[in-house]
Length: 347
Image (cartoon, rainbow, N blue to C red; front, side, top):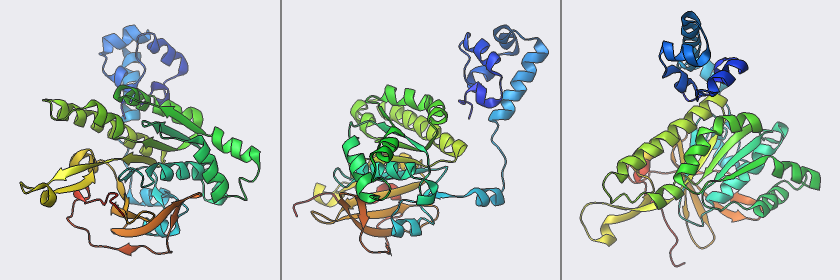
C-alpha cells in the first residue's frame, strides 16, 4: 500500500506538486525520508513535517475490518456463463486475482475479450458499466473479435453502431512486450484505473514476457524472476482490493518432471511459473482440450467453489458452456500448481 500516490493519501495538490519537484511522488517515497529531508523537500517546519508523515502513515496502514463488513460488500462479476457463475457463487470475485491457464488455442484470450465486453454493459444487463484496462503482452488482442463477440452475444444491445463504438472506446489497450514495460505499466496502473474509470483489469498474459526474458537454468535468474512475479502479484492484489474490482490474468503451460523415470512416465503438463506463483492467485481456472472441438474448464482453485469440470466450445459469440451444470471431480494431487493439463493431441 505504500506505493499509492500521495494525493490519494490525503495530501493536498499543492503539496504534491511541491514534493514532485524533489521526486517524491508516492507514500513510500515520503516515508523513506527523514524528518529533516522532508522539511527541506516540503518547505515545512519540523512540526509540519512530522504531522505530514503521520497523515501518510495512517493512510497506508492496513485497515482493520470485520467479517460482517467483508460479507456485506462481497460481490462478484457475472461471467454470463450460468454454470460457472453458480459454482463460483455469483461469478469472478471482486478484490481478488483470477487466473485462466491452459495450452494455446483453448480460448484464454477469448475469455478475456468476452469479459471485456461484459464489463462495459449496464449493470441492469449484468455488467459493471465501466471501462476496462487490457494489458496485452502477446499482441493477441483483436478489436475485430471484440466487436464480433459483442454483436453475436448481445445482438439486442449492440444492434446499433453507436453502442458498439461506445463499448470499444471503453476498452483501453496497453501493449507491453517486455518485463520492464509491464512493471512500469503496473506502477502507473492506479492512476490509469482512476482516469479511465476501469472496473476490470486484464493481463494477457503474465507468463509471456517472463518466460522470454528469464532463462531459469542460469544462476540467479530463478530468484530474480520470482522477485518480479512477487512484485506483480502484490501490486495487482493491492489494486484489486483498493478498488474492489476483479483482476483477470492468463497463464501458459509448462512440462513438469516427476521423479527420475522415463519421459513418458514422469512428464506432465502443468501451469507455468511454478508452485509459488500458483499460491499468488486467488482463483485458478484451467482450460484444456477434450477433442478437436470441445474444451473443458476446471475450477482448480477457489476459496468458495469445489473442484469441478465444465465442458465448453469457442463460438462466434465467445465461450459457450455445454449444459447448465458442472460436475464435481476428484483431481489428481491436492496442489492446483501441479494439476495435470490436457494439451492438443492428434484427434
